[in-house]
Image: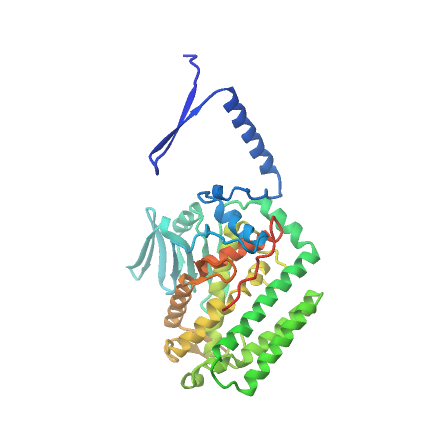
Length: 426
């Protein structure tokens, strides 16, 4: 009809508001300029700075990605950040433990069956990930449904070893380019290693001090605490990552050498923890620890992939196995607060059956089906527990804390470093 369009309308259904936008030459020029700027930003690998107008971030959908409030805190220690980062996950992790279980698709639902009986049904929109333990089966149709909806699927062996996973979708290449450039710099890797190892050793020290507060400490505990303090001081003086690995290993041996003293006497006979052993674990406590660390590996891997970084390119661990180095790096921050503390607490509460929950042979000790179910329940409940972040000052779940720490790591080589690995056990 060759009639000029002089006005556009945008209706916001949530607020039931219609905004009228005049369509004149000035407006068209403004839009074309914004499109040109967006295309230019898309080609760049450098992340643009956050806006000076903090009010613009409050309702922005990208706030959990760029973390503007956290960056303002890094710039100004007096800043009181508003929590724009989601406090917890609202989706379900489906763990399939039984070897006879069968995961299939039914419409837009994921169903878990065993011997013809339905065990669990979840709409695909409410599924965060699917974890297959042992020899359970999953159909091609169910895998395609998960892949289409960007839902990862993970496989763990019956003994708890992480085997592999499925992740769909193309990752943001700009983030990986920034990560590659940063982690090719030895100074950057050394700085990140200092922060990481200091956080791990301080966490072990604080936990032992807190758990033995008000009790008479044995000579072994006192010697271990002093040794960990000395290793922590030595780490901060090191200028080589290999040296730091040595002191971190010493501190870990001191920690696991006395953590058995935190188990109540009546449980020490069956759950004695005489140091850390694995591949395979030799006792019940180490079997629980190893299984939980495999679950933690899955959680950290998911957070890294969701953030868009490359899990195979780390800064502390070296690629000597099928495990992704960056996942192993970040796991060091969460082994103690998410799993070690939960395991010691569950043993002292007499949660575990020393006979029914374990499969014990001369060469190894594994969790049985009932033991794996208990460990999964303890782990998933621990992830949903909320705590107050010691640096940010706001509360969030441990599951969200993992993702937050991954995004803070990316901040180290993008716009504002300084907040990675700074939270501490109180």
